[in-house]
Image 1 (cartoon, rainbow, N blue to C red):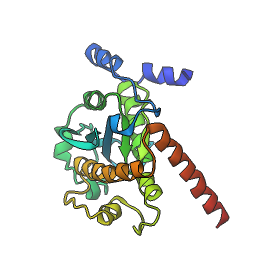
Image 2 (cartoon, rainbow, N blue to C red):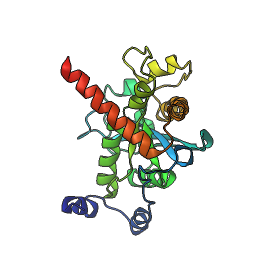
Image 3 (cartoon, rainbow, N blue to C red):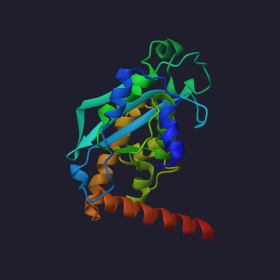
Image 4 (tube, rainbow, N blue to C red):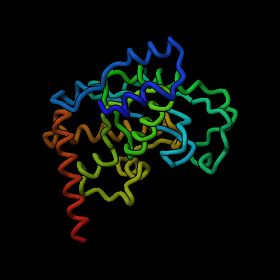
Length: 238
C-alpha cells in the first residue's frame, strides 16, 4: 500500500468507535476475474452532487439498485440524501432538484457511506459515465470515512457503444440510450431513478454481451480495454 493511502485512512475522518468498527468490517471488492457475469453482484449506482468539481463539490444523494442472476432485484435498492453543513444552493439544484430542507434533514455522511458500502457488499459497480462517480465516491470515502475505495467500476456509457457500434444515439447520453432501447423513465435526474434507468440499459447490454461471447468479468474488462485503445487510435488519426 502506498504510504499516502495509509495516512489518508488514519486522518481526516472523525469517526466513533462504532463507525470505525463498521468501516473495518466492510466486505472486500469483487475482482475483475473469471467470475461469470450472471454470478456477479453488480451494483448500479448514481450520485447527485453539489457540482461537477471532483476536488471541491460534495455528494448530496446516492441511489443504487442491484443486478443479480440476470435481473434487477427491485426489492434491493439503496437511496439516501446526505446531510451537508452550511450547504449552499448553486445552479446544480436545477439538475438534481434536492432542496436545502432535504439536505438539512439528511443522514450524516459517514453513516450514509457506511450504509451504502455495506449494502453494496462484494460487488462490481456499474455507472453511466462512471469516472465521475468513481472520483466522487473515492473522495467521499477518503474524507468522511478515512477509507480507500478498492471496488472496480464498469462504465455503462462505454459498454453501450462497444456492444452496439451501429446505434445512432446522438451524443450518447443516458437519455439517448434510453430512447434507443425504447425505455421510459419520467423521474430522471434523481439518483435512484437514474440508477434504475442505467440498470435497465445494463441488462440489455449484458444480454448482448453474452451473444457476443462475453461471459466473465475478465472478458468484459478485456473487451472494454481493447475498445478504448481502438477508439483512441482512431481519434489519433483524425
